[in-house]
Image 1: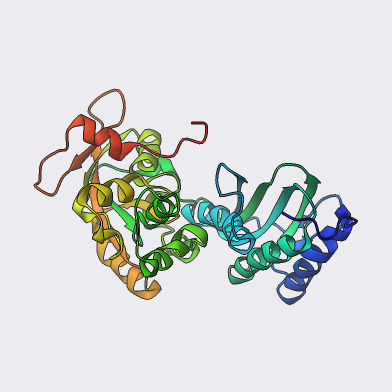
Image 2: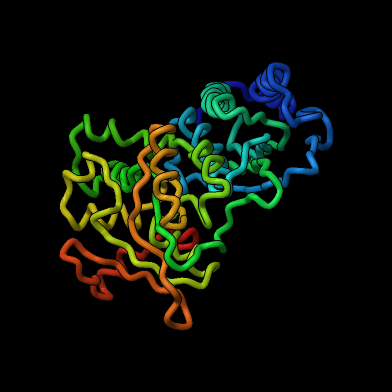
Length: 340
């Protein structure tokens, strides 16, 4: 980033790019926020009939995004990944804090970043209520707060034998876009433009999470790869799963690729931020109704099984109805490793 305002101090930066817009949001829709930016702590009003959901995500330059990433898209995504976590538990967003390390106080970069950040914050009525800024390698850390009716949180540990396994949207496009940007494969410009938004500006499924309260037995958001993330549900619930590869929903663009790439990107690509959840088979009609009401595809891709060994297993069924071999399964189960 090229420095344009070297004299811009921390508090001027906060006031100019973050506090004013936050105060405007709170003035228009205060909600559960009693006190926002400007004091040592923010204050949230609590309801004894509600529980507080809290999640944190960190995005690091060169690790989670390209160093020259569009700052407006980055502002959007930084909050989107946290809202996706709230969605997975059925939480309604209340507000968020932002800790931001910057190589330098670049006004143009901050203007674009805050534009993307507040675009999604306004869309989901989730105001910025505090945080911190400092000089350092580009690092964005957001903590988001949500509200759930007491004992209605959708946890990873609730999957039951016989549950259907569902996913929202279509999977694999973010990984396909990344492959194209890394020049691992070639896409037509129109195809790349169509899917790049899935990588840069994912839509958190907040309304779906809220609609699934009392219906889904378990859920999580798909961030590191569908099957790798599904294992978290299985571990917490002590269950196995059976997954049908051809049922995993894929976009028209991804279906132009070879079957190997289609399956690998959809099953393990990551960065999708759709929801994977389990629910009793008796809830199918209700889930289809939710899908129609939200205009969001929901696809049943498999089922939960009793655990047969000391650790959960995912049995992956190929297009011929046969279980894939261990080598292929290893590739499909591989997910993003934040320390690799």
